[in-house]
Amino acid sequence: MPDPIPIVRGESTLLFDESGKSYIDAISSWWVNLHGHAHPYIAQKIYEQALRLEQVIFAGFTHQPAVDLAERLIDILPGNFSKIFYSDNGSTATEVAMKMAIQYWWNQEEPARKKIVALSNSYHGDTFGAMSVSERSVFTLAFRDRLFEVLFLDPEGDLPPLNLEEVACFIYEPLVQGAGGMKMYGAEWLNSILKKFRDQKIICIADEVMTGFGRTGKLFASEFMQEKPDIICLSKGLTGGTMALGATACTDRIYQAYLNDDRSKTFFHGHSFTANPLACTAALASLHLLGKRECVDRIEKIISSHKKFAIELQSFSSKKDAGSKERSDKDSGLIKCIRQTGTILAFEISSGRDGWLNNIGSIFTQKSLESGVYLRPLGNTVYMMPPYCIKDAELEKVYGSILAILASLE
Ligand SMILES: *Cc1c(COP(=O)(O)O)cnc(C)c1O
Image 1 (cartoon, protein in one colour):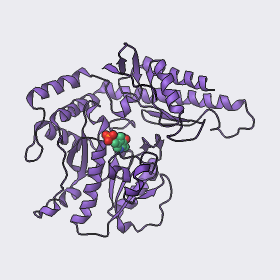
Image 2 (cartoon, protein in one colour):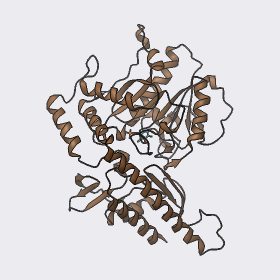
Image 3 (cartoon, helix red, strand yellow):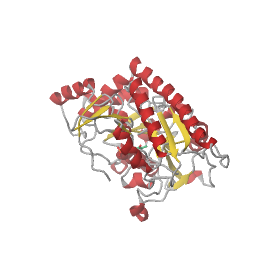
Image 4 (tube, rainbow, N blue to C red):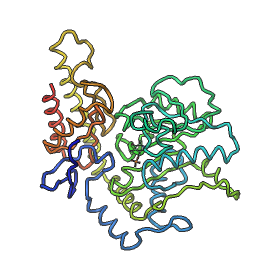
């Protein structure tokens, strides 16, 4: 591996290294950043909050930023959410969701509800519960024997024979599976599965840690389906990518199962930095920016630019095919599977094997850095997921850099 690059400063979409060289952060620093780095409005709000209250135990105490943020999230989340449970990152947000769903059935004294369903190719985080509901892959190889049993469904596949009355919960990344390689699947299929599961009272958990806050073109990916989840997990873009914060929203049905004088029915889960006031303040500031006309317009602009670039990529891949009569498959060029959901554009490089062990990604990163752009493919999957403040000229520079790298790989 090349040595890590010391970054000393960020401004808008740009990251600056020690020597002053800048890089366009075309993947939003692993999908967290929404409004650009070191945003002055968010920084100011964090500063003011730090002078007022930086942290307080969140058991027996509460504070305004946590209350305001919970109310704001309940307002904007699709579906009928009534409560927000705070934690401090995406993995904990999904752990909380699964514990909430499993204990729901325990509290209801329905022990037969034990099975957990997830999607193949999924990623829900790096803690043990989150690893268990994630695709068994090179990420989790060393822990394979210690992960709990999960039934994996193929996105867009048929439902295998399954007694739905034994299923406790279903966890899924709606429409885009991020770490699994920006795989995209249809809203119609997901809606029909959600309908079947919800008819059987199965608790449906939407992991919107990556898809939340505008990435898919709507505020939340769950807005694309008529059937809404019972639980939604949030993190990453929640604070605009400035502070670590996780939130798990649930409906009143879930909450009521815990509202009991029997202490054994308590949801015993909490982290030291649960609902950190600085993080909640950053989230409120980010949501304020996200609601501005300017930001909504930028998201639309990115979506339409990506659409045009996807066509350009398509012609790039078919141009390659034209030379060889043997190749009839339209995916047989240097690149394949060009796809887009909202502000996320992805494609695969055909050379070498698919997946994480393909080293084309590090070559791609190296070459993009040389041109002042930061891209970090997932194995052989190249994708863009820029902060919304990215300028037209910067988008063009990223596209140009991708085309130049592809040309150099021919
Ligand atoms: C990144 C991610 C997580 C884990 O979040 P961390 O904050 O990195 O723990 C969980 N689910 C999805 C869908 C993610 O993309």
